[in-house]
Amino acid sequence: AFNEVVVYQGDILGIPNNKKWQKAFENHSAIAGIRFIDAFAAQAAREIEEAAMSGADEHIVRVRIVKVPSEVNLKIGATAQRYITGKNKKIDIRGPIFTSVKAKFE
Image (cartoon, rainbow, N blue to C red):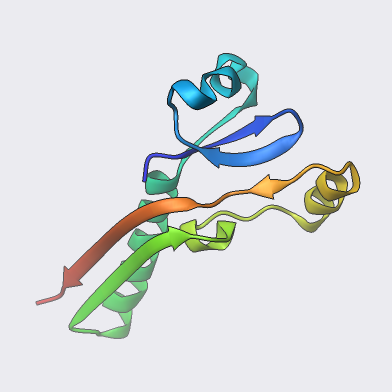
């Protein structure tokens, strides 16, 4: 849930800030400042606001394992994707988050 988006050796990665990945976090200019949980919270807030405006009684937003960036409210532009993959680099934003938000409207 606390994985962060980092550009490391030309790859865009969603990685935890731990000893295994410490080298990726030493270069502060490569840290995007986006954590999976923060991106999910923004997505949940948007969905809950939309549900409230539509007159719903309750709304649940859930995410388990992130497989693609859009599952945690992230988008990488098509031009950036082509550039990164054209340089034989990867976009690997995957990982566990297992979080749910439930809103009840009264």
